[in-house]
Image (cartoon, rainbow, N blue to C red; front, side, top):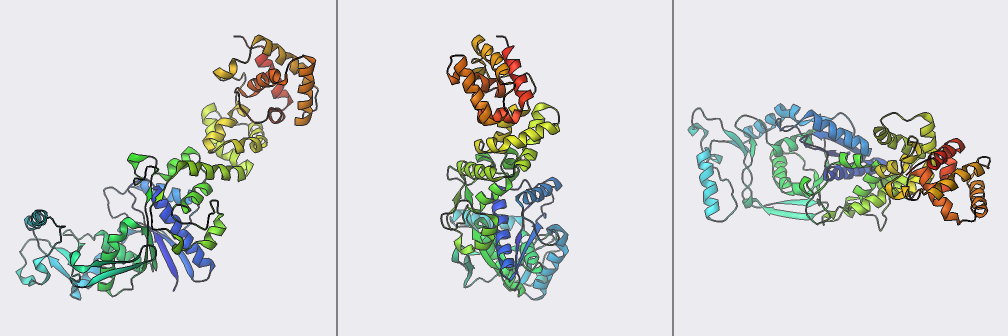
Length: 473
């Protein structure tokens, strides 16, 4: 058996956090089995049968999100709508075999059934008189729906790889519609036919689909096809314990990308939402592929914690290549500056990155903390920082520029020069160092000031000191 799984999103919007985790679990499961010798194929199917709500923009957003997360799929993308004729053909096979029937229930009859169920305080279960009625009695000019002739006795059991064995009495399920009156296939029918034709062996998806699994199992059995193994993973809840939704916060993967999260951090965080390997929080992708097992997926809903995501992202920022980080924050800086970064700016940012990246949790924070390195002169300090540029501070900065102009431009040499200057001026080191920080960075907090001076270089440092010394007000 070639282990084959799929991710099958509906292109009616962005790639949701929950969908991204489902895709990730499928990808990990496939890549684990590929490594250990029994197949391991990960397919992508776009379930675009809702022609009104499905859009090319949503398809592009889903593909872009998967590519950003590094979840590559095998083979061509399958578009479900293109298989509509195949879906209908499967239903006609069932009709020919007597496992499905044409149902001519009118809207009025259906409404009467709903009203009776409501009056009796029970859930609606459609019992169609056309299940065993002579088709010759069909009303003329009425297009029927086609229903599955589902078993009404016994039970249907799902041996779920996450939820365990789950059983539903067949008496609780009605004869679901397979083809609508206009000839279009319904969701559960299309899913079964596509999964069968794609050779899907394991269906890994959110547990909101568990009810569908019972109906789909009945369709598989009616068609005489092998039922895949099911694994229904719990949904993701927000920090407040409620199901994540657009009303309750940010749920689009693309939004987290815009906020400055790294794909490897997002991937690491998502894999830990519902799956674990001991107490490990940071898990390399190679290790995740090696360790991943559906048996380690919990049954309880996972809770999305933005603070934990920040911490994971901060870890990956520290580990990231400096040149890569420069390329990632460059567009953010250029948008603020209104022009492209020069080669000297990019080089300065690269050399500054070791001191910057441990101080940020996201690329947005990193770009903001790096901004002073590429800001145009004269630097405009923040209001609280500007208060330190008193007349005496400006005098000291002008004198400092003259004193260090010929210094060895290394952190240790610069520190020695600054200490000697403060002693010569009979002032505490802080009386010089804090105005110096404001002059060079425009703020009260920054990486080590001697590191900043080294990265800025002699000419830029002296020019910024001169700007601050000449500042008025």
